[in-house]
Length: 377
Image (tube, rainbow, N blue to C red; front, side):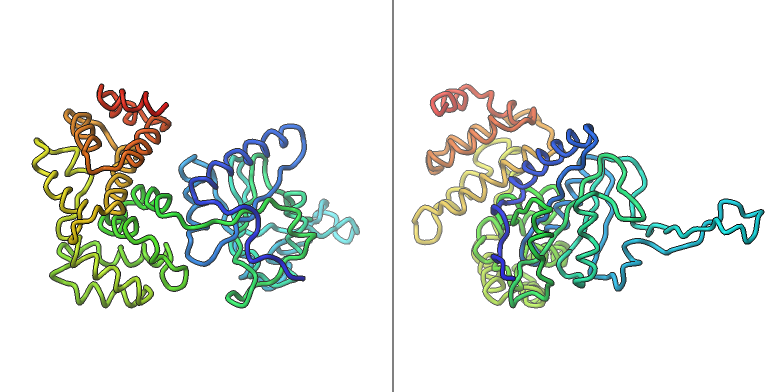
């Protein structure tokens, strides 16, 4: 049976998180009525961060997480557990009332939810294991055990096709789940990377060169590994040979070339959100910003301006951000620069106005920004 290489709507991580929240809330409401909810299957190419996204989703909410990799199972006992003989009357040998029960596998959750059972890379499992999982997807239980209350089931899967060694799932299994395909979005990745403490120089690179994330060797996962390897190098330009060698060990050639170009052309004077917000005067960052905004040929580099604006937005909306004296004024001075396109300025203010964080409202208190925002509404 042939299926499309993608399943369900294509969503970035931010949009998918919002959809999952709705689904899980609905599943809980259904569960309160004595029925089970509907599992979710997240499709996507390798290295997109499907697994990490679900782990982060659970962690950020304080939920339990049970991890299961069905591809590692060799027999149904890995799903059901080990059969053992139970004797209700051990003091009466040969009474004939013994019967067989199963001891559930260690990965099976026992605590009450909320929680997520993650079936990772589910379609890399053997066909027999897939057939055994069908009851779990339908009833949230196996013949030998059941999920506790308020537990959700999320599976991840790679697309079917020549690029991946996967087991096709038939319609009977597919129709037991809600399907979504995770796609790469630089801003969504940057939000995760900022929260995860990824080297800000790496985040800036991805925002400036999102097209280099090819999905072959260069994936969000390999980029995170690369940035981890080089985060201890203070001066990339001085160690460019080492940086390029490490990049080539993980990334596509085009990405390596782009990163070397990024280091030689831009990174030496990279403008960070802290440079703008903590400045005593605009002179401390304005000259460098104007240089980046124009580029070597004098043409406006909207891509660089957009990357700086995105990083600034992610910085001030992060949970660990705390507003300080001068931040509001500095933020307004930056945003009111003539070199920032009106649509980009308006988009940033609208995003901030919709964000629930107190910092977002604090930064929009400046009368000049408030006036511009009202014009947009």
